[in-house]
Amino acid sequence: MKLLVTHRFRLYPNKRQERQMEDTLETCRRLYNSLLADRKERGTGFYEQEKSLVTLKSEEKFLRAANAQVLQDVVLRLDKAFQAFFAGLSRHPRFKRQGRYSSFTYPQLGGFKITGSRLKLSKIGSVKVKLHRAITGNPKRCTIIRDVDQWFACIIVEREQESADATLVNAKPPVGVDLGTANLAVLSDGTVFHNPKHFSHAVKRINTLQKSLSKKRSGSRKREKTKLLLAKAYRKVRRQRDDTAHKVSRYLADTYSCIAFENLKILNMVKNHHLASAITDSTWGKLRTLTAYKAERRGGRVILVNPAGTSQKCSECGEVVLKDLSVRVHRCPRCGLILDRDVNAARNVLKRGLERALVEEQPLLVQRRVISRFAPVKQKASGFIRG
Ligand SMILES: [Zn+2]
Image (cartoon, rainbow, N blue to C red; front, side, top):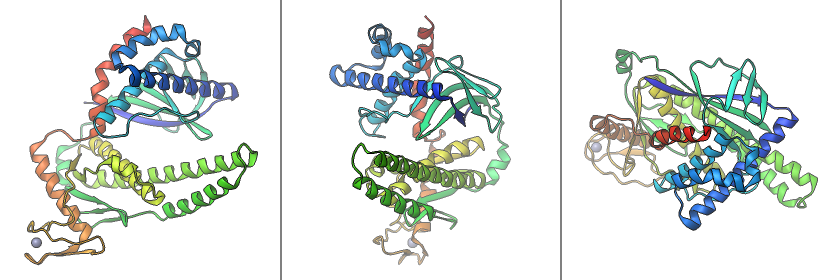
């Protein structure tokens, strides 16, 4: 079976290359906004927009500076944003303000190429890259990302999946996961992952910087400096969150075969304005995605289940035992079960997961569904670029 793996490498562009990458981001941002306006005003669809790109390029000079496939990918990206919106997974696509567009993608090999410690990018040049691990397999896509003042390349590689030993996978137990705010995750077997302390440290630092930013005169150098510090503080949170999600997901994928999560609405999470909770929320999303990715590589799978009533139901006898958030222990009057509230919820998640696993063969990963819908479209697009 073919498998897609993502590698992330740090880039060290020189001044000229950096300027060119900035320019490409800006070009893509302008194109994205004009395509979005077009869809809003005239209701144009993906195929029409894809075709109109050629005409657009002859009309708009600024588009010529960027690689054709990179621009093509912007059309696809906007369409994906709409698909996610229609599927109820995210908000309606919005116009990107200046500086708010931070990545562009070469959708196929040729536009980018790896030779030694250099990454050759069409229209940008040969950029120094730190390959901290060897790339095995065929590079398929390359996304260049600006992260505040650093640059990265995310390279998607296709390789043959080493077939997971079925007996080994089956020897692992299944598990249910209850995601929470007091604790990041509680498992049906009683394992607890606490919310890391650095989350609250980061919140303090960000609040201090935000306050100091509001006192600085707009346009002043001090304000720009504080803005950069703030962006770096946010980046630190993001990296810590990702690190936590990586560690927990690795544990889950290594230890269990079938991993059941609640199918919480991501849309609701994004609306959370309280910073500390927002960090936890985004960690959940990351955790689920990464666990699915890693479990699949080890022959396991992630199952998403209906979250309704998981904390109220008795995981032993099914009796509904109503309790508000302050009640931390589940006590069942019917069967006498006394259990930590979250562990009880996690056991319910596991139960539903196992029921679901019997019915459905495919892993229920929303993201994968969205991506696979576009696979044939991408190939179609590639033929048209060469012409
Ligand atoms: Zn009971």
